[in-house]
Length: 531
Image 1: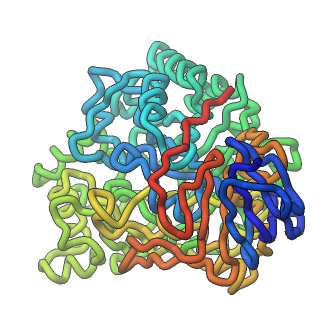
Image 2 (image 1 turned 30 degrees about the horizontal axis):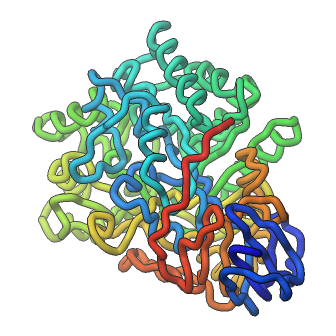
Image 3 (image 1 turned 180 degrees about the vertical axis):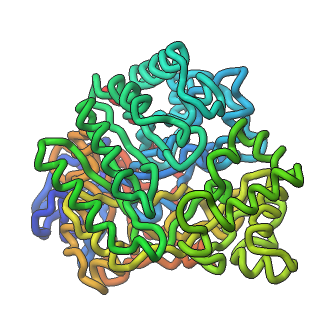
């Protein structure tokens, strides 16, 4: 007898092959039967006529590791059909952490839950803690280069000593042995931005000894996009590690169109025999910390150093000058425009959320750069922004490329409680339904089968997951059932805390987490460890 049967749906199996009508039978955690199962008894039957049955979606680029401590139901992700998240991206991970550098890592964190305390030191201890209490989705963890650097040398703006580099290598190796899936870098964020390529190569060599990957928020996504992508490729070439270029984009109007050149470089690397892929999200706005818009020197000494500069009139004036007239490259005004930078999250300054820096400046009688510094000071450096700076043609081009998969660059949020605050980028609620609704059904940039492959089989292969990402007998029953005529995102920049429509059922490890569009409260997900 089957535990569960999904009857009458169009099975799109994640390989890219055309969909076929079939029933799906699940027992325990596995798919045990495909085909005509009308005579097979089952404990529960889901009727899927007119619906698509696909492998659960894999979010290749997520930051939920900081939010799952608040709410393990992963509401905004699992309601999109996501059953696995790759976290620890952009150099940010909650481990390793040392007692002497704990406050520096707290300052580095993208988000800190209320009352949060580090209850671990090593990556292994962190993984055990995350896995101990149940999760709605499965999780793959990367080790952040930023966390490694802080543990070894804080926010020192210099190359590591031999001893400090050895410490980073040891901490990374320990994390990989404990089950972390690879190394991530965020090369626009201090202290990752302080690292030379040689440091990254030395760490990637450690990760390359197993099946680990190297995922990089590259050193530049505007004027320096192409050399930044080449740097990531160089690291793969010199170490043999699989390279994942995170959230591929060309930021700022002067740089629109360069995504095609970046993809051409990835193609040439693949022709050499290198394993290089990328991910992207289906939006024309990006999001990051407000402090990331400052020059590298602003974060010398970490968050404490930044706050000290904001409190010092002369240092603050220098920061304002750097925003308005940077020593290198165009200013934010030239690249984006102050009216295109919206405050998304400002703890302690909720009246700023949802407003552009230009509007805040006009309301307070200061310059936009000064308004940005005011928000940073008022939020102790923790504000986040949305930047409307990407080109729709670039988005379509990246989505259509065969080596590009889907990654939200968002987090598991919820429209209630602590995670329902602010005006976050809508990608945390809408990425996967938006691909299916806007770019498959409406614009026809992708076929249904291509889109599902980019969300399932392609990232599963990139991670070396043999029993997930493809709907076949013997695979783990991570499954999503959605209505291809209705599936759509509803989250907007003005009203981001809105769940999508059209995602009807989601199974994680064989158990229903979403049934008839509602969360069951089940937490069958687990931390997946690199073998």
